[in-house]
Each structure stands twice: as C-alpha cells, then as structure tokens.
Amino acid sequence: MKITKLTLYRVPPRWMFLKIETDEGITGWGEPVIEGRARTVEAAVQELSEYLVGQDPLRINDLWQVMYRGGFYRGGAILMSAIAGIDQALWDIKGKALGVPVYQLLGGLVRDRMKMYSWVGGDRPADVIAGIHTLREIGIHTFKMNGTEELGIVDSAKAVDAAVARVAQIRDTFGYDIEFGLDFHGRVSAPMAKVLLRELEPYRPLFVEEPVLAEQAEYYPRLAAGTAIPLAAGERMYSRFEFKHVFQAGGIAIVQPDLSHAGGITECVKIAAMAEAYDVALAPHCPLGPVALAACLQVDFVSHNAVLQEQSMGIHYNRGAELLDYVINKEDFQIVDGYFAPLPKPGLGVIVDEERVIAASQGVTDWRNPLWRHPDGSVAEW
Ligand SMILES: O=C(O)C(=O)C[C@@H](O)[C@H](O)CO
Ligand SMILES: [Mg+2]
Image (cartoon, rainbow, N blue to C red):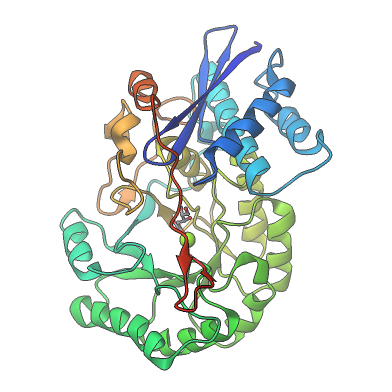
C-alpha cells in the first residue's frame, strides 16, 4: 500500500482535519491542530507530506521516527501537533486495512468503559451551578472548570476569595455527589498557586490542572509537597522527552497529554506507559474534535492508568460547530452514566462526514484565543 495524497480541512469551531489517501482506496483521518495556530500546523503537515507520499502507511513507527528525527529540529507544539494528526490518520488506515479498532492492534481492551468529564462555565467561570445541574440531568457527574479569572503574579486576598467562593458554592449545592477538576489554565503564578491550593484544600477538588505554566514545571514537586490536592498537567507538553522530566521530578499525579499535540497515538501510548511506571494517572486532554477524541479513546482503552477522558461537547470554545456535527456514527460516541464504550468500528472508530467537513471548510474564519490584559495594561495569561 502507498500513501497518495494528504488533504487538510480547517473547520469551525477551531479544528483541522487531515485526510490521508492510499493507492488501495483506504482513507485515514487525523486532527493535527494547535488551537489558534491552525495555518501554522497546516504548513507543517504540508512540509512533512514530502516524507510521506509514496511511502507504506502501515510502517507507522518508521514514518513517525522519520517525521520526528528527519528534519533535525524536533519537538514543540507545532511540529508535534502536525506529527500527531498524521500519526492518528496512519493508525486509522492500519486498523481499517486489518478490519479492527486500533485498540486491538495495541493489545486489546484493559477496561469495558471509560469515564469522561465535561466542562462547565466559560473563560470566566460563571454559571457553573446551572451548568452542572443541566449536565447531571444527562448522567454526567464529573466536571472541569477554570479555577480563576486572570490573576496577577501577586494578587489580592479578594481575588483568591472569589475563586474559592465559587468552589465553596459548588460544594454547598452538590456536596460530594459530583466531582470536579479546577483548571488554573496557566493563569496562576507559583506564589499564587501556593496560596490558592491552600485555600481550596478544604473543598477537595478532584485535581488542579496546570497549577503553573508548563515552563515552570520545576514548581510541580514544590507545590505538591504543600497540598493533598492531586496536581495535573500535560496539555502543553509535547513528547516523552518533556514528560520524562516531570516523572523524574515528581509532583504531578495526573498527566494530560493531548493526542493532537503530543505526537499522536504512537507517542501517547509511550507516555502512558512511562506514567504507569511512576504510578501517575493518565487523563488525555481533548477540547478538540471527534477524530482527536477517538484517538484518545483508543489510548484510554489500552492504558491501565487511564482514569478520565476530556471531551468537548458543550465546551465554551465550540461556537459554530459541535463535536458530533462531523461524525456519521454519532451513536458510537454516546455517553452512558458518564462513560464512553469502546469505539467498535475499525481504525480510530470515527466515520467522518466528509461532505459536511468540505462544506464547513469553505470560508472558515481563523479562531484566535482572546488576548487578556491586566488592569495595568500588561499581558495576562488567558
Ligand atoms: O481543555 C483544557 O484543559 C484547556 O485548558 C483548554 C485549552 O487547552 C484550550 O483548548 C486552548 O485553546
Ligand atoms: Mg487545561
């Protein structure tokens, strides 16, 4: 079999789908994207295609190494997202060629269903109570929300109290009948993370995500030493070679590699195995589309330490399209009592509505995250 063509579709809300065609008529889909930098990743995929056209798509490991090592420079959000989407599509092709879901190619199921969670509240986490009520009605009991609005490197007790009050209100309303993670989203500096974690401790959130920016990873063990709240990170780390430092230093209880940013299935199953060796849980990051989610689920169902799966249905970023809008086999993505079942179809398990994708890609606008500024005019972490 030979790869014949790569086609990219930027689509609402902020996703990009990759279609890889072969000379035997089998097509694979991937989702190479960095939110807000789709065109940059598009260019990276186009450059990488020079290594791919004419090659055997079933030699995923060799193609991955060629893409990762062949260009001398490596790693980082753009290149690893481009490789990720290509890798997803290659696994999709391989599963379809052999007539089995990807998880069968990775040793088969380690569980019968995979727990998921939903976002509530938006960039400025308001209305979380109403959002939780709504989602509980459809059997979802695990949530994530932004832990705070923008915060100064050193900020006021009042700003801390506002973040804590929202969490206190959730516990007052729902007690421990629900669980939730708090995403600090990189908005919190190390000094303020220490304060916030102390004040949030009594409310026992399931985890605190990105307690500080990934470039401040040396603070993870220091922060972990001061709190019993499990710390989570990983969406802005892009390969085993970044995660290994986190495993060695300790402090992170849950790693959250993004299947569309951290090199794809080939890389993320290795990250998952490394995490297991350090007794670290896996909770793949996935605020993206259905192909990315399908890739996550393929890794979840073969990873003993997978504990939670993020998905973007109803997320505040999805303006103009929803997760299942581009999926033919919507029924396979049904959530039952807060869990996904293994995707039964061959390959990644998602049948992409190509007509819908092509139509949606016409005249698509480029998504950008908001640029936040502090009251003094300096740039704030979004
Ligand atoms: O889902 C999460 O955990 C996030 O932090 C969302 C963030 O990754 C945005 O997708 C960036 O545009
Ligand atoms: Mg996050």
